[in-house]
Length: 153
Image (cartoon, rainbow, N blue to C red; front, side, top):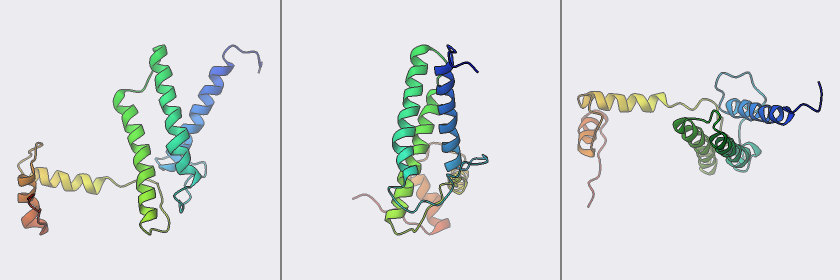
């Protein structure tokens, strides 16, 4: 390998991006072998949370900005926002649980399907309506789950 390659800077950039991607996917345990990031988080100031919140988020924003500026393969708007949203929600959810007395948190594979199933059932009970209002949801939940929605005063 020659150290005078005109593409060396680009190779280093791609390597750093690859390592960051490995760490992010490993923390979220999405079918990746692993780099040791899966240990439980027991401290609100855990280095992995700080890395996600600061380093990774800033790096992704820089990659997006430089990709847009150069016209080369930027994330789609939806992917970019989803990546930032997932990262931020992982950090905030973990910190919230730790401050509420949970001893440790595993950030792997957050379960969203039960929540989606509840909303799917509500939509189904309301005739497949995707534009639900509070009254329709109350009508579905009230009799089935014994949940009362407080009326705004």
